Image (cartoon, rainbow, N blue to C red; front, side):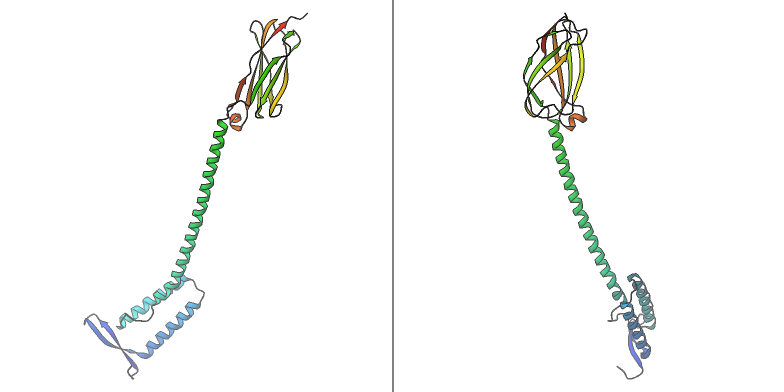
Length: 257
């Protein structure tokens, strides 16, 4: 280092295609680096945003580079650059942002996978239930025995039919009844609806009473019962019941005395 007050520095001269010695005041150089170091310390410990830091550092670096270029100072300095210092906070924020983004994406993908599994399981379960309900076409009641308690009925009296059944399921029942006289005249009797079949599951016995309506002709007659069973929501919603027609019951009707 020379003892003179001015420092000798080398700078690349593009006109002479080589390095030249340039004299610069040593005092001004030290002042410039002092203020730069002070500004960097205050700036790194301050509370300003990273965007403002980058902007101010960039402007300062551009002015410093231009000044050094005009004065002929070599730009390839080994000291840390302002751009490198200002990019460090921005790089950390970027890494944090990418980490949070990847965590959010992984969490979202996991939630979507769980939702897809749940919907698939629900679809399989729903399909199995609908298939099971649709295939349920077996009559829930088997008629084991049917007999006429009053084979001969006088006009104004009632027909009694006894049933022994095996009830396999408790379902909604709609009962339609018809009587046919000796000339095949059809008489419709009031329908009966049971929200639940009257009786328990298993073997059951009961008798039905059917009054003979007015205008019924004497002679051979027939009683017919049609039962509609709805045992699950598919059969109820689609009006697709299980229809069971019991065997006809034959009896005789005598004229009133």
